[in-house]
Image 1 (spheres, one colour):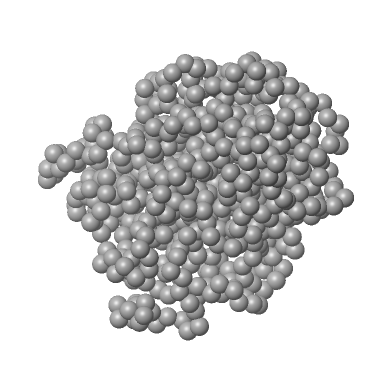
Image 2 (image 1 turned 30 degrees about the horizontal axis):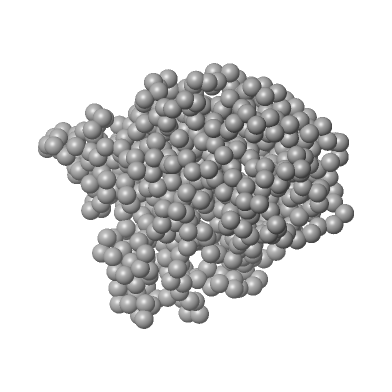
Length: 629
């Protein structure tokens, strides 16, 4: 019936032999279409190995983002995807129908005996990220005998806990060098899986656990086994990691959003490679760009709260927005992060690490981040936000795609045995026998002030409540002055050299309403897509995104309704030495358009603003569009 109505709407003839899925959890209508086009290119071109990638060039006649990737060694069209889909990519021009017949399968764990030297930055301290080779691998089994463990906020733990916590790391550091539970070996786990130490099985593609839908579940398992190892050192199954509650903007003492005292006052928990300028009482900047903004505490808290609301509540209303893009066997790695992985996850990494060091060690670079014990408390808070996000309701649910649920990893457990785990077994923290201390999340109800409509006088730019000029009504004369950069096409790119603004066409509203009534009872989300983002993988870089604020620049505050989201690169060499990271940035903007009072416009203005050290490194984009998820 639905396909018949599609024909009635004049939307083209559906490809025969494909079926329509009525549920889109974990699958963006636009980015699956992108996967189809990507696999078409892969079937025609034998991609060079990653080591042959080139860095960014100034010669625009040879655009740097036209780099070849590694071929998986098989024809991806040799068999039909078991989940043949009818995929829709919404544009103002209509709704083309595309049959996705690419081969798909879940990511599998690598062979640990095939570890190669990780890609480390020049001058980095020598690190062997390879893990001890196992004699056998066992499958994970839930342990019903474990007590329910409570992960507490690090700024609230008592003296008895701190004594145990410090002792556990002392014991971990003193284990033999060949013990996979030793702290240095635990840090190597993160290095190996984010800096090209392993290939995906049966491919020439590096395995990467960042910047995709694997980010949240892989790190949950990493924390789980690290916590169990610490408990084994103490012979105390009730022991649980703390979480660094940096999203809590309370002014109570002790402050939650500074470096917790437990990581400063205890020798086994101290790391000397933290930024000396970011010691207490300096508040964490959840939008950190590699350079301090110099905000007063009140403004910093407001900016932090607005970022949390945008990244967890307003801009992450669907699974694909929160978790990141699909990453399947044979795919090029790091297709695109979710909202929280970008910021505050990435920004807290960079804020904590010592940016005065040439390689941003330790927390400031992914290859060395887990060498700082605070890494695990940082990621415990990220993991907590997964649980908080699901509690908000709506479409905020775990992904149901079997290629996500059946993705597998391996970790050494508390008994030094190698254990194979699945993503699907990590979805319930109750089944894993841990929970989080309830500290409240006041940012859930925080929102920046709506725009003032009183100043939308002809010939003037309406002004937001904080006095920043913003064309909330998007006057026709202004829209005519701004060019449309458009969707990604072959050979086109834009290097961000200062603020860049573009007019972006929105999908046909009437078509959207008709499709929404046929596809699902749940609300589709309007998504801004920044295509073909490319940055040097070993450099700190960041740009912010604003809606209908054409004059936004690097001084524009983020605690305003026009701020929509950020792209952040934490330095790492997962793409290969001297290579560039490629990704797609997707931002949910449905609530944003409603808040700005521009939900009925056919075009919006998008402004991209490089910030901090992002102004000093080349950032490239290939297209800007709007789609529905």
